[in-house]
Image (cartoon, rainbow, N blue to C red):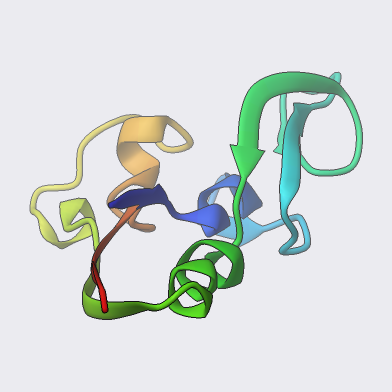
Length: 105
């Protein structure tokens, strides 16, 4: 199972680095008038943030055993590409995907 890393919507380029600008919570992802994705105000982007406790914890609660858990490995590759603040660039600093292998017992 592949999950989106819920922290991706929290980090925004501030001209120097990626900064956490929103609190960690689940729900509908919104885009405000400045074009910043957030969880508090703006237009619905069509994206929904599922927290790890809901996704992975939910698997455990219904009887799955987690056999493997790893973040996507883009951030370990060199050289870093993309314009700062772009999706391509962000992936080198914060793994966007999380891979889970689970088995039902």
